[in-house]
Image (cartoon, rainbow, N blue to C red; front, top):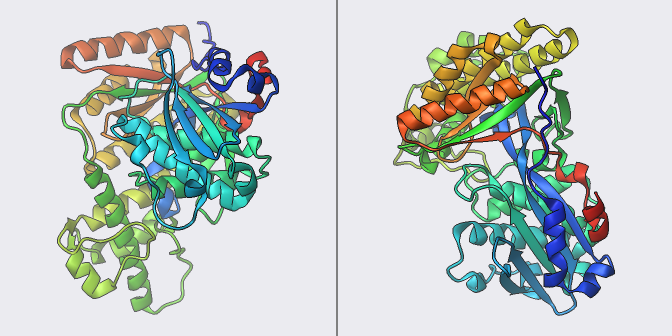
Length: 475
């Protein structure tokens, strides 16, 4: 068997070669343009537990967004989307209005822009305001040009916005000589995505898009432990992300309700601890800090399976969360959502331990155990949170049937918007990638649904660096 040589598909050199005609040869030759690249990101384990204090494992994929930034002198912020056309599509905004802390942004220049352009532009403008407040105001007051190109299909269910924010944050910071650490850049991205109305504003996507490394997963912890670290995959092992077209997309409301219900469960547990009035060592600062043993022994049978928002408010008050709110008219499945977070956090830690052990020992049994934790995570996410799809269930069942002896150790659904995402832990050989392609081709014909494959390969924007144009072409 031969190992594959994965590399990022995004052609930064070609992107750079097209920049001088839009920015002007003088700007390009003066090296006033900085270029970077941020990869798409996939949640491998634990993504849903981020805001509940859980450990998250994320990987960078082989498709990316390339971003270039050049400072201007005309007081305009110009956002350009480069595609296959002769000229990029441009949207122009007044820099003073973008940097102003008063009022809302005037988005009239977006007109009838495509959805990704509109959403991405909103995030970029709000990110520019964040970076200006962090110390780049003087440089940005005269304006900036931001040029972007993405090489993934626009209908692929990947969090594009968090990745775009990461690429732009890295490039603007370099162009403005703004010395921000990676965690602060990721937080600026999170705030911008949240203000722009992103359905899943998180730190994990921009952090992974900034810090991802080929052959490893990023370990992202709760806000109280902000420094991420890397979990190296065993030699010859990789991840692949599948994007399946689904017949019944999972609505954003269901994801949102699951997040709210988990937070409601956390509030109930904290109130139960207070009501018990006894001293113990339970870590109730985050829902993920509750162990499964404590949950079963102390709280599970005292927590309602379902609860209306109205009843919750009357007994427990308002939810203590900046962006999540309980709707009095809705009924929430509190116990199962909280249970998923608690058990998932345990699975994530065990998964990381077995992957690390497999790297040391080279034993397939440890990878097989890690894979079983992925299958358990998929079952829990589907059954306890109700966000599974028939298409992903079919794919995962087929991969499990083939099993470790054929190079497929585990698979689970992952957080791709409408529910069509699957992440696979597998051998990184031509034979296994070919076998995966054949399997998915057969499933695609049977279901008449499209299935795309993305592989884990690219380095994050902070690893790639924000480089002057000539250096980016050379590198």
